[in-house]
Length: 144
Length: 144
DNA sequence: GCCAATCTTGATTGATTTACTTGGATTCCA
DNA sequence: TGGAATCCAAGTAAATCAATCAAGATTGGC
Image (cartoon, rainbow over all chains, first blue to last red; front, side, top):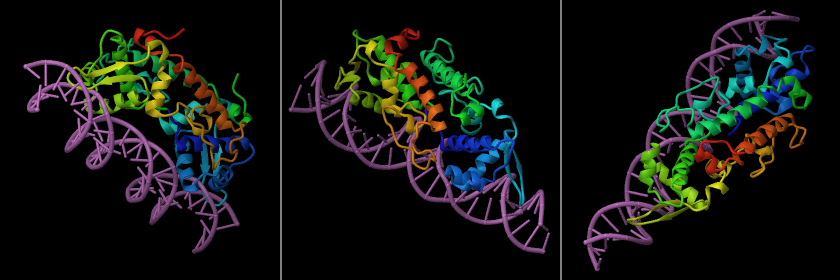
């Protein structure tokens, strides 16, 4: 049940980009300094977020990164899925990346006890993270 | 946000032991066969559950493992913590294994945005798993 | 008392993942 | 054209995961 450093850094980087959204862009070393993130590691995270369509970037001397979408329409769930994959604790209850469980005596019967509990856990996690936007996150207050 | 194979197998093994609770004990190969678990791997899981005080065991020819506690008083949260460690996605929001987060610009200020979201996620997970007993699990119906 | 079945314990392995690092290529602006 | 930035593919060291293996300890049955 762990969040990777990659996802944590991604959230923190997006926090900084949300704070300056509309006003400025930031270079990787600025984000790294503000959030104490190893700069070269941060780079590959920003790149992934860019490929996922969340960030724009600009090379060269006055380059940097900026948030493309408005902070109200990006959820933390989306971000974490980009870097860590599905939120579900187990493949057979994932809604975004379902995977049939083999080697299980119930083989995908929805009455499988493991599937039932983990389905509930997945829903609880997704309920929070898919409703928590970057705007909520930067404001430091839960959505609602 | 993943559940390890170890924890999954532990839950499935305990499911079998719950089903025969009070009536019989089971040997590791019986559990392994019913739940398709590699027997030597299962062994170290059962041992960990025994050390955690959940199982009793008996060596020799008519040996085997049995559930010590009643299925109503063992929660899935307890089981998963034995094998996978804390439920919290990040150390600084764990209640059973709190760890101060260093290298974070907020250094443990409860207003840290990451701490706020992940705290909510931890609570949601624990709310489910710490109220879901082995009895609920074996019955295939959520607690309540 | 001996044997075979069973649990107990610790070490080891191989694959994968994590958290970075390195080295270069490309782009932009002055 | 040169320096400052992003882009991108690999590589690496350490940890973790999922087993596997090899010996020992204990018990029941004969």
